[in-house]
Image 1 (tube, helix red, strand yellow):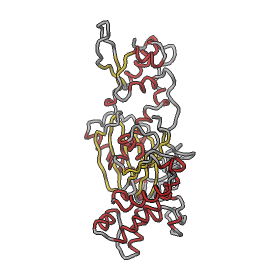
Image 2 (tube, helix red, strand yellow):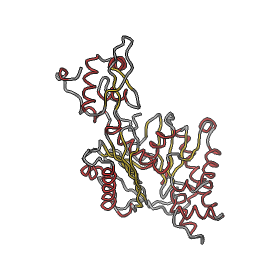
Image 3 (cartoon, rainbow, N blue to C red):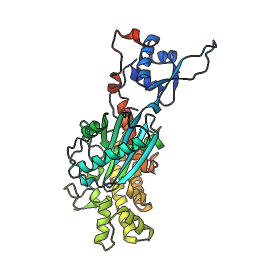
Amino acid sequence: MHDEGGPAHQPGSAGEVLGLLRHGRVRTRTELAELTKQSRTTISQRLAVLVGAGLVREADRAASTGGRPSAAFAFDGAAHHVLAVDLGARHATYAVADLDGTVLATTTDPVRVADGPQVVIELVGRRLEELRAGLGLSGRAPRALGIGLPGPVDHTSGRPTSPPIMPGWDGCDVRRVLGERFGCPVFADNDANLLALGERALAYPDVDDLVYVKVATGIGAGIISGGRLLHGAAGAAGDLGHVHSPAAGDRMCRCGNRGCLEALAGGQAVAAALTAQGVPARSSADLTRLVQEGSLPTIQALRAAGRALGDVLSTCIALLNPRVLVLGGEMVAIGEPLLAGVRESVFSRALPLAGRDLRVAVARSGALGGVRGAAHLAIEGALAPAALAALEIPAGDEGRAAG
């Protein structure tokens, strides 16, 4: 899947050959030549490039019909690693993964993103170095680094753009700072987008139309349509928290507007509203405790938040017609009141054709969903056409390629 919607690998390129070998496939030169419609000489050249880069290895293969073993090749995902970061408003999760997406090590910190990029990025770098050291990888450069940020991210530059819950981060060149530290390309995206990638990879690999909605301090959505992650013109697609919600009335939002969905259904907004009613709450943990204690005002507030969210999502369903609507984040983890409100609105408003086969589900990717998505972003970036084109052997050098 080309999640970024970028160019495909050129026919007969090293990238096309690598794509045919990924995900556990083992193929011979003859099979690769037939699939790519290239000569065996060209395929041998491409394989030499990929073997030299450590991306492909020779693999065991059964003997051919004539009794002579056929040389076969496989993707060597375990030979390299990528770094992944899921940065939230109050947490950061870090991981090291191989090129197959297998998480090799992970850790989590409580973090205040509002402390600013200098403090937070230094912590991110230190934690990633500690993970690499623990795996004995300090002397090996990562192929790439992927990071999810809790706010709008310009898709071209990878910089946060006026993020409401990230004071001091506007325009911060996260990719440059981390790239200089680790000596590898860095790819940044909105955290909800990476959660969508992680959830799809883990739970819905055969679903091409999926919307992942993260409900936490803020509210955002990652949209996969036709198998591709949608960013919009500048990367702002899915910023649901700042869609107008009639249920929010004239409530002031942190973005400066009034009546945003987040001002009613975001975690901080729900807690503040309950506190104003005489039910003290500051965090999702407080809300969870209050629901468990049977607090009627809390249950009602969460149900109302769910209905407001469902109203907005019913519009998304009409526009995008997803097969699966996934709900995740700390507010969803509280339990049934919010979920019941969402389902009530979604299924009462969805038209028969859009709602007939729609599945509304709680996220299954858990606490590692974000870093799995970040690792996926890093892997696809490291193996993108532009990255692999640099490995190609120039014309006229074919004689030096392995036969």
